[in-house]
Structures are given as C-alpha cells and as structure tokens.
Length: 273
Image (tube, rainbow, N blue to C red; front, top):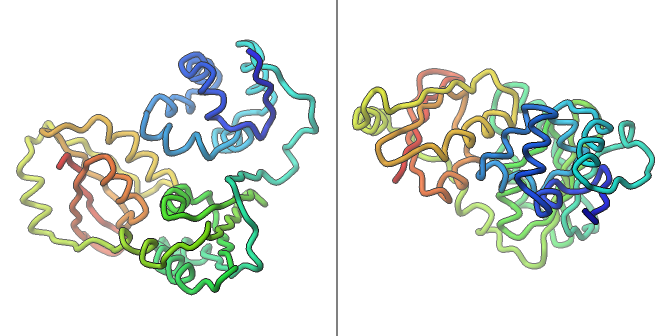
C-alpha cells in the first residue's frame, strides 16, 4: 500500500484503501473497533476522527495501532509521538475574528442537555464571530448537525476531561437553518403507549443508556437502529430526550415517541415509519 499514515490520518482514509481488511485487523487488535462494522456509526464517525482520536476513545496504544496497520501494508511516517500533545481534529476551517466562549460542563454535571444554551449562543453570534464550546467529550451529534447547516469546526482534546470545539460559519448561514430541525418533540404518554402496544412483545428490543457517559448513549442507540424493520421497535431507557440524535434518526426513516417517567428518567421508542 502506498498510503503513508501518521497519528492525524483520518480513519476514513484507511477504510478507502481496504475497508474490510482494515476493520478486521482493528477488531483483532481491540474488539471496540467492531463498531466500525455498523454502517450508520461508520458514516457518522470516520470522516471526523483521526488515528489519535480513536486510540484515545478506545484506549488503544498508538504504537500498537500503527504496528497493526504496518503489518497489512501501510507505510508509517516518522514523527514525534503525540501522546502528550493536544489531539486536534480539523475540517476545512476558517478562523473567525473572535470567539464567544460557552462552557457547558456544569450543565452536563447536572445531567441536563445544554442544547438550548448552545443554540442560543449560536444565534447570538455576530458577523465574523465563532463559538468556542467547552465540554467533557467530543460533541459528535452537534458537529454533525451544525456541519450540515454550513458550519466548519475544529476540535482540541486539551485535557482528559476537557474538549474544546471551535465552530465557524462557512459563508452566510441563516439563523433559521440552525434551529429548524432542533425543536424538542412533544411528550405524549398516550401516543407512546399506543405505539408500544402495536408491536409484539418479542419484537421490542430494550436497552438502558442512563448510566453511560456522553456520547456513548447516542452510539449505543445507533448501533441498534440498522436492525429495525417494520415489525420491530427499540425501547430505550434514557435520562433525557436526545435532541441531538433526532435528525439522524429521521435521516434513517425512523420515528420516535417519548414518555416521561420522572426526573432524569425518560422512555424512548424508536421504530420504522
């Protein structure tokens, strides 16, 4: 293989060379890489993450990752180890004149969704101003959402529990395009119960994501959605309505319903429309 790789090489570049060989090799290295076999997760993640990023997420040593790729024919670039440097993920990005800084870690610590605060901040951005978002994880659903609305971004993993994401408008992005698809759905307990009763008991899969750290709830849900058909449903025990996730479900032709059980306890039903 002629491709020379380093820690900042995107996973998508590896898969373009030989998807099956790369995935099978990585699964042999670390079973967590089996998520790459899921087309939904693969399309959502691989364009954005580098080798350094996935090694950090999967707790894989970069040297072991590189060795496994070398064994199947990739060329490894000589470079300074990146373990002690910030991990930076860059999409075509134009630095704005200045940033509005928003730290949502305190909101996340209360198990609340900071989406409203983030969107309010995006809406307030002045011409030439970008958003500097500080939280505890890489906000892949938000990146996916805003990228589709014409924003560019870059990500820095500055500390173990601190990730800084920079967003910049790519040209003229109307404010309405950011908020159109992000309204929180109406909770209708009766509709939820009726929809659930329309499925046979053995055709409903149950998963509990309430104790998972962000963004693992989204990944756990998207890992299951390709298995749905017109006669099956996915029942999710969640702490909140995952507003970030809903546009991705709609792209897959999926419907959803919600039922509130109590504070920090929401039932979610996902099904084929």
